Length: 413
Image 1: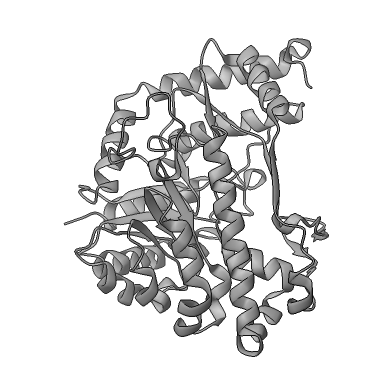
Image 2: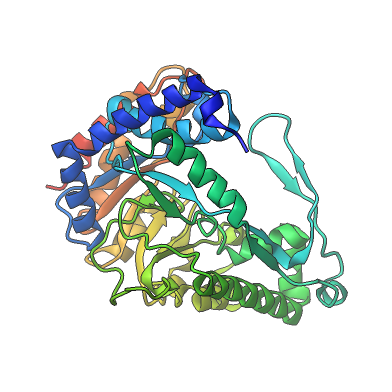
């Protein structure tokens, strides 16, 4: 365990950032953002919401100053809020606390999978361990998971010692952010090509595989409930695939001393790996498992980069669907028609090409891009989520320009 008391530089750096975050959290504009997000997530919003996901830290030109690994984690968390407020100007809300995730380890199928990672960047290849589907399904040990209470407490003690008098700790569970993705579990266990072929050649085996995946995910969620490892996420909480959870609709019961249940919180599910299959195959092989899981949450945000309009006949059956990811691979016009006048928020992931790919940002092209979305979503409640917009030029002000354009041209009439 690191000891902040022996590293005054790290401690002072964290305290400096914590004080600045505490100041930002008390600003009137912070209150307006909370009000706007809450109304928006009820589908009663008075303006589109905008968030820029700053998760590629090395690309935004502000190197971390702390030397300890854990200190760097908290430094990045705090600095992200400051950058969002001072340089980007989106609707990210700076909280009056610091987040500490519980440490949960999960091993899908109970198999230690070999992973080959790129020399640089986040890319990786998961080496498949299911080669003969019928045979190998009977040999899988079964998904295992455990809670590392000692490591979690060390992290709590670490940051409390540094900034606890400035920002209190809030426990969160980020394990579930991108976990409930049944098709990803299937692809990583056997490759996408083999999965697609097996849907045609061994459909019964694929049904069995998806049943196993669904059973394991549901058991994992119930285990978290029973062990008090779920936390309400109806405030300034991140929802995977990019969004914020502010809502006065959850929980729908008095919690008191009882453990938080899945039905008390937002959930996220996606199936990016379904991009190459037909709507009928999605309905047969993927959707039933997603539906079993979705019904265990209070509200649902569905999708990531897949073209969900292709599978809408299935997706619209989620009883608690509140947000839908409309990526650059979606038919934007069709999605606008499908979500018009509904209680489902159109989360537009605007293409990052104008912000990230070119030496000079083509503002005119980006304006037309946003105008198109605004035109096609006149009957929708719209949210703009900017992903992968950090630039090789280390220039966060490009994100600021993008936000300003959306504020002007994406605004409701």
